[in-house]
Image 1: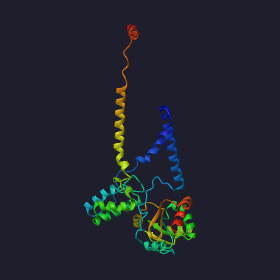
Image 2 (image 1 turned 30 degrees about the horizontal axis):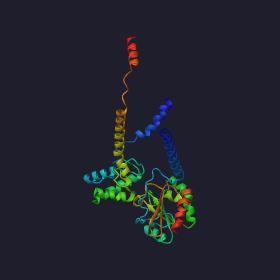
Image 3 (image 1 turned 180 degrees about the vertical axis):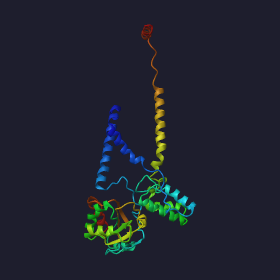
Length: 190
Length: 154
């Protein structure tokens, strides 16, 4: 190859490489597996942080503590989902949570930054869209969310049978993420 | 043309309209001015993860407010600045620090100014070397001299 040919080929190759990179990024963003603003979780690989949260009043589900999570996780891997009634992306992932719960996966809910213990928004939301949660804890001040490293809702964590956090998703669980990441990991950890 | 200018202005406005002042809610402040100053200083170095290029001291997001409260609690409890920052990075990772520490993952970031400066110096050196290597043009031949004299005489 002559110097001249190399000078012509280099920009073409660089453009191709950039196109490939952008394609991977965009398809990842569309599927929800890549988030350019995403912050990796430091909790993955660590035990569940200790906490104890009161239940949502006017709703027939018990509150949630780290002991409840560990107890359920000792039998099979569990999902912990931070959500809020004012959170629009939570609505996107709600059918997936309903499906996983119907299949017997324990799904625990932590209601993020509720205005009060009796959050009429949350109960109306659950009544309207269905309640996938085995237990619901009310994080009034967002303090428990900070201990988990939550920076927005929805966020979902998968806890293995030893009580170690194995996976974190910041953003809604789309049907693609459910099939490509959640189900295989749950099967692997079972 | 007017429409284009207007469109550009509209695009630029949200960027320039961000208030520059820090958010100080008197209800959040610590009674001890020295501790309050320390909490503000720590807050300026912590990234708000919702609006990622603002510090928690500048941001009015709910998460920033929660973190400001936690920073003040830790300061009031007697933690050193390093302990407070460690408390937050323990939950959100080093990304939460606006001044990233030197680690294996950030070596490229810290080394980049030196790399760029080095590349620039190399380019300048190569430029001067090449200029020296180009031989000066040969002297004019008799024929050319005669032609030049003729042209100048005209």
